[in-house]
Image 1 (tube, rainbow, N blue to C red):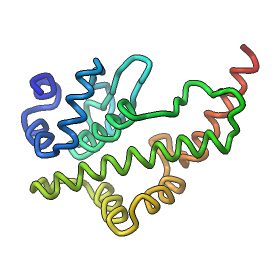
Image 2 (image 1 turned 180 degrees about the vertical axis):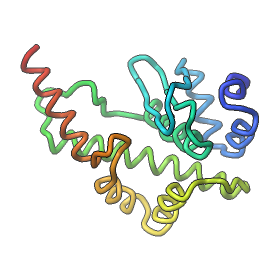
Image 3 (image 1 turned 90 degrees about the vertical axis):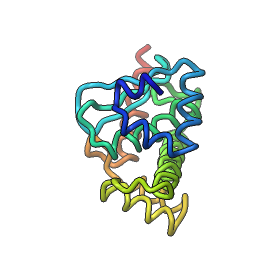
Amino acid sequence: MNLLKRQFGAKFVSDISRSPTLVADIKEIRKRGIKIRRIKGGDVAYTEKANKLICIGKNASASFRLTALAHEAYHALHGRQSIDRLQPGMTRRCFLNRVLNEETDCIVHELEVVHELLEAGVRWFDRGTMSWYHGWRRGGRAYIRRRVARTDNVFNEKFPDYYSRIYTELKHAKKSA
C-alpha cells in the first residue's frame, strides 16, 4: 500500500482500505506481479495483460481512479477474453458476447466495491457512478449488461460497435499474417 500511497495519495489509500474486496484485489495484483502505473491523461484506464500492467490517468478524478482500479483489477485478475487475438473459428457474435459479458462483470465488480465504500461512509462518488450504482441495485447484473450494450466507451463509440471493429481488425490481421 505504500507504493499506492506515493502514486495516488494517503486519502486514496485510506478509502481503498475501507473496501475488503479492493484490498484483496490489490494483494492478489501484487502477488501476481502486476504493476499499477499512472499515465498521462484524465479519465482513462486500461489493462495490458501481456505486460502485467494496469494504467490509470494522472489527471483522473478521485472517483474515477477508485472505480477504475476496481474495474481494471477485475480484468487483470479474472479476465478471460483477450482483445489482442481471436480463438480459431470464433464468430463475431461469440466474440462480442464474451467481451460484453466481461465488461459487465468488471462493472459489477466495481459497483460491489462502490457499495462497500458507501457502507463505510465514503460519499464522494460522481453522478455517473451513482447512476450505474442505483441501476445495479434495482436491476442487478441484467440491468448492467443491457446498459453496457447501449453505452459509449471512452472513444465515444458504443461498446458493441467498438468491439465489432476490433473483431474485424483482428480477422483482417489474421488473414494477412
